[in-house]
Image (cartoon, rainbow, N blue to C red):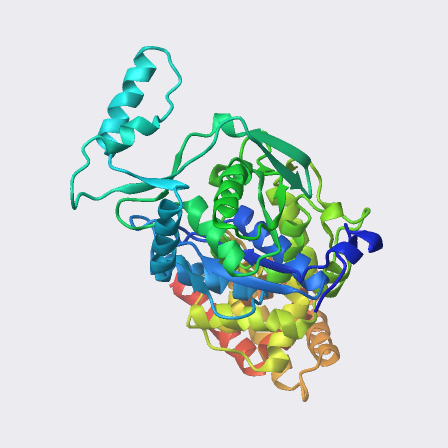
Amino acid sequence: MYVIPPFFTASACKIVCVKIVTRFAPSPTGALHVGAARTAIFNWLFSASLGGDFLLRIEDTDRTRSEEKFERQIVESLEWLGLKWQGEIVRQSERLDTYGQLAERLIDEEKAYRCYVTAEELARRREEAREKGEVFRYRREWSQIGAAPGKPYAVRLSVSPGEKISVEDLVRGGIVFDSSEIEDFVILKADGFPTYNFAAAVDDAQMGISHVIRGDDHIINAPRQILIADALGLAKPKLAHVPMILGADGKKLSKRHGAESVTEYRLRGYLPEAVLNYLVRLGWSFGDQEIFTIEELIEKFSLKGIGKSPSVFDSQKFLWLNGKYLRDLPGERISEGVVSLIKQRELPEPPPAQLRKIIAQMRERSETLNEIVEQSLYFFTDDFEYDEKAADKFLVEQNGEIFELLSEELSRVEDFSHDDIHGGFERVMQRTGLGLGKIAQPVRVALTGSTKSPGIFDVVEILGRDTVARRLARAIDFIRSRSA
């Protein structure tokens, strides 16, 4: 499908129309952090908004740091966020022959050359330059130092000085680099693995990538990738460099600012809809709108909405947004996440009708799925401890009679509805002469272990007749054991 990008004019499209193909290309050296996740989201939304393709490439050429477990985490995080890619995953480690052949071709065409100088020799010369106060620059004449038949070698691209390398960045505008500031750089290492820039330039062309949206820390890579593509006669994607995400102190975002990986947010009970919404708003806007459905994002996203200034990560706003999604999404959607957490904790799963009632009560007082479960454990199991201060105050001998009377009255209730439960409490109030407050709080502690819970009638109704009777009896036994 060929479409007109929003930053193209109709007349421009008469000259060139491209199929929109974006990619996300993480290195599996760690879990998917929020900055990389935002990059994936921007690329996915851009292609989705224009009917294009979104591809996934794993850049696993760092043999010392790349691990399969991190690739699995990245893939699982993308799937959890709902970012679906087209086609098979491309792995650079499976394309070494391609990079090697292209490097040899450049050598044959005298656009690149073999370099035998060792890393140790380069380090020595770099130190010499530092001691002299000079800027270190690689010199081509060093390439044959130590050359010998059968000795491993790197491949360096020949860079002609004095050329202007132009980048028409779709976010930042035109950027011009001087090739004189770029030394002959390595494209293939002595171990046969490509450098980042070589593999990226080759893969983008061979995968048909039309647009690359990435962090502005990659601007430095743009001229090198352009030089590689030009040397090989490959197509070059359009580039859009997005400003970085900062912490509240104005420094580059890190874990000390409260930013976690996508996996960690999932485990903490964040919702994928909220994570996606918050991250896409870090650097992109559409008027004053804050909350978007997926459909709205796909409809409204364009590169014009990406700002040129860094955005600031606000963990409290992120938590607030997750809480809003927690309260606004359909109950069935929240139930899925709660059930998953219940199973992880090996708690008994309540019937669907009961779970719906629990969520209806707890979502209003929670910000994450974990908080729903943490604050409602007493709904799932009898295995909880009484809060010590609450027990000292409310699980006392004079309240034992209240528990016995309430158990008796509730045993007579037919359908255990909210109104009938209310009636049972009213009768206990009449028999004891106590107000509801004097009865409700001790009962709350007996049933939940603490003084905090939803309304007592709601708690009793959700727990059900048998559980309430069992817990009131437990509280009576607790009181007697302390009095003995």
